[in-house]
Length: 71
Image 1 (cartoon, one colour):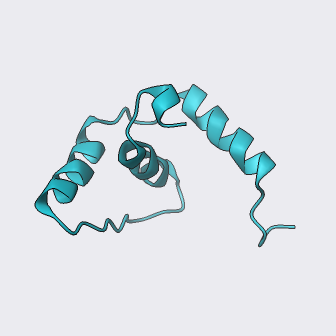
Image 2 (cartoon, rainbow, N blue to C red):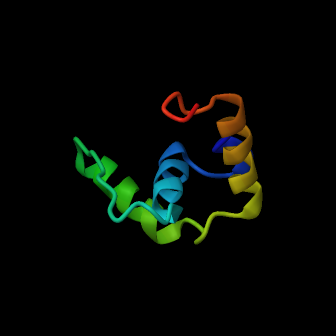
């Protein structure tokens, strides 16, 4: 999905978390300076909010693979 929308997996994941109204902070894991830089750049450079097309794909995936906690 990330490739389809011209994003890296990090940009997609952190963009998703960033755009959820119920998330107040994001915890990123980095084991190297390069990973930390990629995480920071994802927050800075990723379109805000993610495009409606990206959100539609998230919704499509969610409908296919529902949260087992929500029956």
